[in-house]
Image (cartoon, rainbow, N blue to C red; front, top):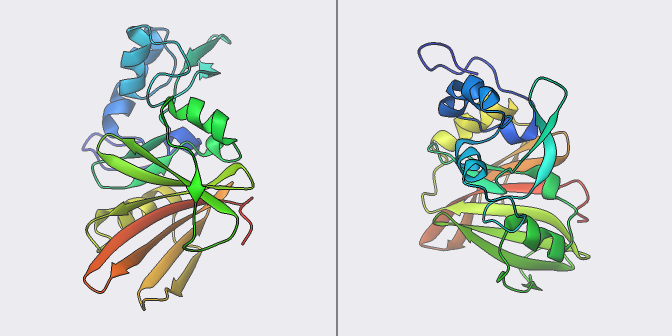
Length: 218
């Protein structure tokens, strides 16, 4: 929630609202009056245009909306999103999905088949999801979705660290990553959220934001 000058005064605890922006809050009353429930502005647009199938890009059909009169409504959430502060958020109810259910949720019938992931962990496979000029590495372990990360070309945290502080509070853990930089971890209700510098080569480093399910086995 924001005050009249646009300063964040409260972060809503429901998962899909943790990266909510001021425009959505301003539209809250109008959305309820429209009978469309609470949803992202782009999601609301798709509902108004009649895209009600579960394979539409960027979301899925659910029955969690609330109109204020005890009637549930159907709306979609966005699977992965990056705001204008470069803060990465996701629909964390996706964790635990099989590949087929995951593919349906993100609405990409032509999604690549999972490939072996050799870089860290064990028994992992990766699927890359491209959306709105962003690429998300989605990792599956034992056939279930357990981890996703987004890398930014700028190796410095910038605003995304402070937005994470606004959304999730003080990091639960700070440690030194293998490349000597500081890694930050937040323990959320259902997963871990992490930020750290990932070194691709001696001349290339990216800033990584990552969500990892509690079901991930190290």
